[in-house]
Length: 69
Image (cartoon, rainbow, N blue to C red):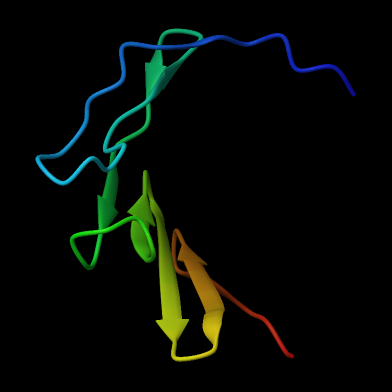
């Protein structure tokens, strides 16, 4: 699969986190938990549920997806 979309118009937080990339004219707002890039908690309408071992689930539009290890 070839990716042809360009990422443009990025916005960064004061902590160097990519908070809103723009791809093909659509902006995707994101949010991080800590002040580094180790734990993204939201990108657009998707929320990420993290536990000490890493990503455990996501929630999008009321639909939850869990991940087993």
